[in-house]
Length: 116
Image (cartoon, rainbow, N blue to C red; front, side):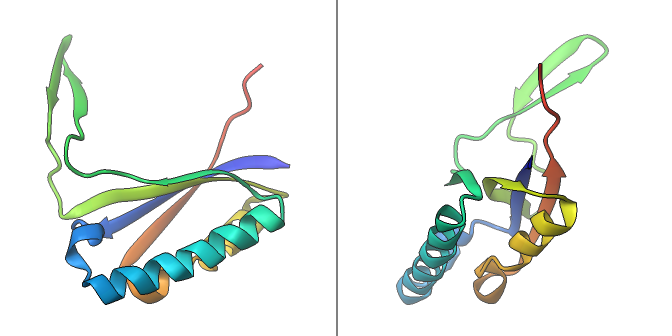
C-alpha cells in the first residue's frame, strides 16, 4: 500500500459561496464518501482548509516573504490522505468524491514519498 495526498482545489471559497441548502447537501454527500473510505480502511486523514488567515511563504534571492499572495481564483479547499494499492486506485477513489457533483473542482493526486 502507498500513501497518497488528494489536494482539492476549487474556484473561490466554496464554504461561503454555497447556499445553506447546498452546503447541507454537500456535507451529507461528503460524509457518506468519507464513511466509505473509513469502512474500506483507505482514509488516514481529511480536512477542509480555512481560506482566511492562510499565508504563502516565498523565497527570492535569500529573502523570505510572507503574505497572502494567491494570484488566481483557484484555492486549496481541503485534502484527503489515503492509502491505495497504486496510483490508478488512488485516482479511482478521488473520482468517486461527490464534490464533483456539488462544486466546480479539481483534485490533484500525489503519491507520498516514504521516509525512513
